[in-house]
Image (tube, rainbow, N blue to C red; front, side):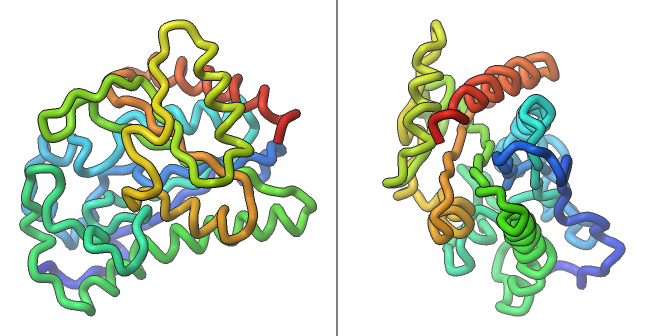
Length: 254
């Protein structure tokens, strides 16, 4: 159980950067923040636990902001931790509000009522997706067909299993964007590129793009970078520049 949430607890559940960027690409960062609003009292977790991947995607927002700058593309980011509610899950998902993440129990997420979950939807999930929908609609109205790119990071080891990929490209049956991005990455020396690795849409991690791209016939791709490769600002910049260059090269193909 948590205290009732007040408006003062969260000033900005979602942030849009470079709203009027000229690129058709629209960048999305579902897990940009590990922020826990004050009314939730850290969900019973320590500061150290909240720095881990269970609370957010470390490095993802730094890469996404660099991509936004290079591509002149709008960027939408969630400003609340996925431990409060996961914006990249459908509302009926069992891990929409995770009771545990990897091997860590989340005390503040135990035995929540339907009303408490609905409160979290209104706090973070709904405004994030409303912002994405509104931005897509405004760009379509301006004659721009949006191309959606979701930026995430993943851990090198998950439940004791080593993951060899440096980057993964996640896609569904529409490969119009994924195909040239994969080709561009595979042309980079020394990169181990996962195709629908370490996740695929079958793992229920593709909700944001299913909701906003697939249902609207828009091109989309999900990018997963291994988070031990983006631990510094310089590494984030390097990956952001690399991905912006590769995506920029696809514009004649999409």
